[in-house]
Amino acid sequence: MLRFISLALLVCIASASVNPVQECGAPSGQFLDLRVEECNETPCVVVVGREYDLEVDFVPRDDSQGLTIKLSMILPGVELVVLEAPIAGSGVSGGEAYTFLYNITPSGILVGGTFDLEMQLSDTASRGQIICIRAVVMVID
Image (cartoon, rainbow, N blue to C red):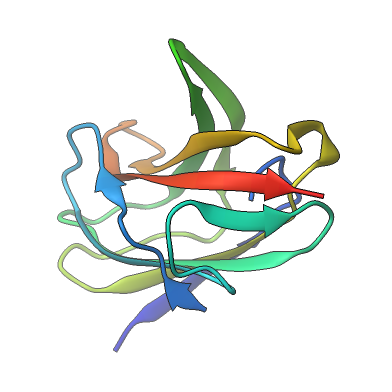
């Protein structure tokens, strides 16, 4: 059974599986699936000011007392970190499947832009990467 970790965010980015999703970095865990409400193709088109449910299924290799999320916009030659914060109550056990759920609301500052959105979950204590994924996002008005 999947366990749930939830976090509500109002961030500057943007339920069907998003394909393709690229794995990135050197994660120790296993990425299973990414679902974004009303998005099942690339680029994932999101509307400014609308809240979207985002779900990520993953299996951590090791136990963790707490996770940290990092969201970045990847532009040519630039990584713009939008959010990096510990997730309250997010302890996980290695080898078990989890669904990380949060809400995102695109900002008007990004209208017309298409970019890679990178999400990393890492162990808060060791900073070791558990999963890292990228998906192409387009923001419209």
